[in-house]
Amino acid sequence: MAAQASDRPRVRVAAIIIIDEAVVLVRQSRGAAPYYLLPGGGVDAGETLVEALVREVAEETGLQCRPTRPLFISDTIAPAGDRHLVNITFLAERTGGELLTKPTDRTIDAIELVRVERLSELDLRPSIARNIQGAYAQDFRIDAAYLGAIWTPEDASR
Image (cartoon, rainbow, N blue to C red):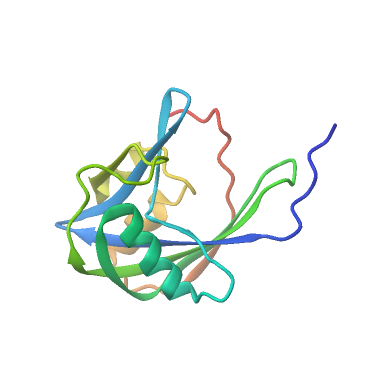
């Protein structure tokens, strides 16, 4: 039986937060292979993108942040059509808090600071490591960009 298409796309916001030339990432795993995400999550009904981002970053990492502007927009659409995320990635400034040493979200294995030049070595989802590296090299003085549809199969390995 074919998977049923989602009724509508889900909106996910994520933050690029730089601390000492490293990006804050959350590590998750399905099976044996870890993968990484920028901190963030779904936008609830009645919640602004900025409110959702601030809430999700605090919940996942312990950091307080101030989103400065959107940098990247992309779609993640499963080949079967049963999952569609619209990803909006913001540049954000850390305004307080401390990185959690032990994540409180049970889906997160760890919170890591990863040097920008190492991003392309990781299974980052969506796969925007090179976009982040390019923007970082330009001190994030870039226009917001639509990156298209990006799908990473579950069995992706690097």
